[in-house]
Image (cartoon, rainbow, N blue to C red; front, side, top):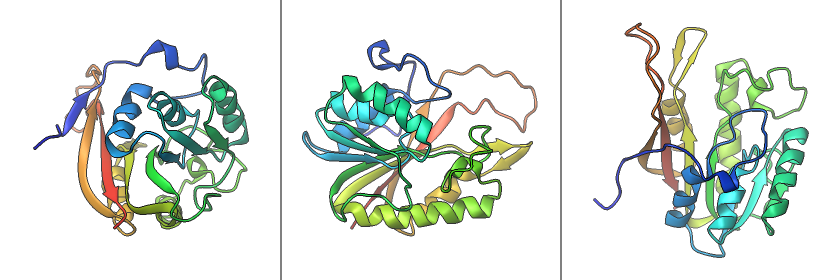
Length: 223
């Protein structure tokens, strides 16, 4: 086996951190090694839930072309400003269920999903805002539609890596990562999983509640 199943992440390079963000925007140190592993210099990398553009920063520093889709106009504007320091990266305010990208044009897809049950954008009036979906079945259906569309834009043989974490919502365990794996596997061939670990302290004594210090990376491929 040439690849470790887990990696401990301790922080990001401050040179690539945004000056400010309204929420978790991810780390370049999380994404850049994946881009290097699953694509080649000059390839086109797509993040369909691009948020504040961290994946595109990672694409730039690894010598790839990046396209990011972000449904929130405000967040897309923030990301566009951030990416001014990284020429050649394109942020589009758009819906992952209708990616404005030609079919079979993307060499690698990498994304951290908008998690179900978070407090971000719950009242968003924007059609296609996954954070605003309060019904879990509706969320998974929307994700199914997105994966169907995204599979079309991938080249044959291209890889996709989807970061997702199981959730605890209102004291209820939601097996988000496992359900996402099932939905993703309906459109791409699942290959493996990786786990990112974070050094988070344990603060609860309830045996049914852990410190949620791990995130799954679902690795799939278009055959």
